Length: 87
Image 1 (tube, rainbow, N blue to C red):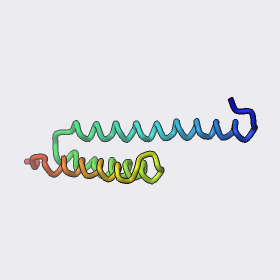
Image 2: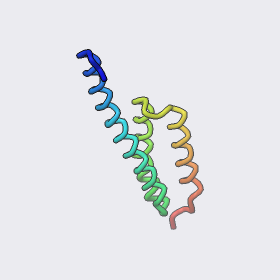
Image 3: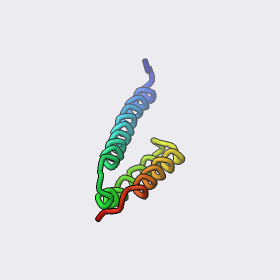
Image 4: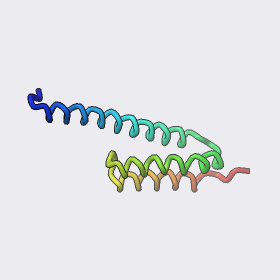
C-alpha cells in the first residue's frame, strides 16, 4: 500500500484514468459490434465515420496501438466494400 502523499494521489489518478480508458474502449468495441450487425450497406456507410473517429481517438489517447487502429479500420472498410450494394 502507498505511504507517501504523492503516491496516493498517483494511485487515485491512475484509477481514474483506467476507468476512463475502459469506458472509451468498451464503448468503441460496442459501436464496432453494432456496425458489424447492420445488414444494409447505406446504414453501415452512414455509421462508419463515427466509428472510425472513435477508433482514431483511442489510438490518439494511447489506449490502443496505432497499428491496431489501422487494422480495425481496414477490416471495417473491407467489410463495407464487400457488402452487396443497396437496391
